[in-house]
Image (cartoon, rainbow, N blue to C red; front, side, top):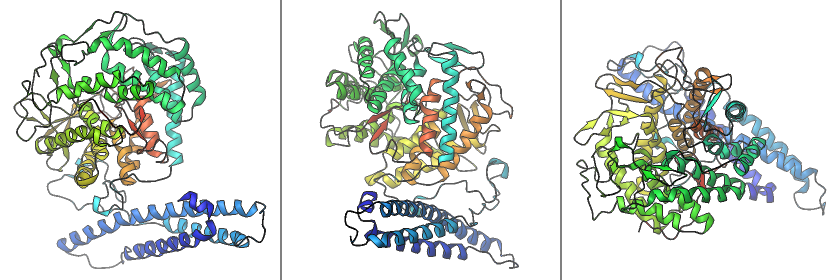
Length: 630
């Protein structure tokens, strides 16, 4: 532990040195064992397949060892610097034991660190390319290149604590590149649309989609703070304090207002401690409460903030949407924790209690083996489900996400067991009914249910599922959830890699013998894939997730960056795509934040201290000993 090393460096350093030397020799043996002799006879197909399988295993293990060696080298350098600093300080007692040995030990640590660094940077045998397959045309994977690993490290080769989170340092070059992208996006917004909901970066205008509440400002507050853009944060805070007005006669989404504005305020307060964000949050929430005044307590989807009039849209047949009424609990529990007023948590949690009451079916007819899955529409007046469609994409996604996140936010206490049970039951239904594999490549995907049969379609929105599974991967479910998360993560990345732009379409279809094809060709700068990459990297430490995230970021830079911000694409299937004219607020709130944290030190916004709402706003984890779901 760093604190222990700081107190007794001269005692603990020999142990660190011994460990470093051990890894040095292990890595050297791995390297030598993987050198292939020249001039050998070409083995038979069977022998070649066997050798390549063995080399693939060795290659993956070698990459893990190389990463561990680099981490040890960094730690040895850090210890050496600490010891040098201690040796330069005047001692109260010059004859103190070990005082004269510190410079020597520091020099020794430096030498070993340099040796480790040199060894870990030698040319390594990279992942062995797969043998040609008669069922998988080479054209199906445009990203597979000789010497580049393009798959994850299997769970049984990862040396990780499944109940914890990996500790890893930052990739400073890539992290700072993401920060520069955020600075570029913010400059365009601040120059042309400050105070409006979103920027139109090509026409240099702003537009209001969320009642004109300055959605991009509030969505970006925590991103600015996390990236240490404090001047920009202060200007945004000043706008909130002096300009923000909720008395607007504008019909807006209750769900979007909660996840973007309420969630943004709570995260900004938890990070900065500035009370203005809590005061504004309470003022706004009081204007949202009328949406919950229904016979069932299930809120309406739409509200006029000035009049308090609430309703549901006609296209839902007056029903409320699962992902909308089921994605407000994290935010209101955080608000109750901060204000001490339990009415917000009670109001939000009662919704889940009502919708999931096992004693009342309310016209819910789940598929066989899918009892933990819930339909998309519930009438807030009658309390009846009005359809049987099930999706982990649009309109269903974050309901399931919040089941596990509510359990995490409250410290995984006994009082929150109901959330954990609902989550595990939902995952059981998802695995048995909706998880399928494509042909010919065997890509794992999450399908949908139309009320009578499986629909082989997957929204990009559903790419949050790998990260959700990683959050729930502990105890008896750890291996099953992580393995599935790794497989789904690979599929989501393939949505990007198989397009000429390197960016994913909004939705893909899976056809027998064709793997995936684009079903909706636009890209809105969505965050779900990079969200899961960040969480899986912090869970497993596998560097492939940083590699994939960097490739996605580079594609955003190449195709979506414009002079004054970033724009979505109308068709990702063409090499020179046409851009739209919207910089979504979630690009700053989520996409860039998750990319930054992917490359940042994993102790920053640590996963055992914070949980993210569905708009990537972090809320603190705390010990919660009661819940209104019970």
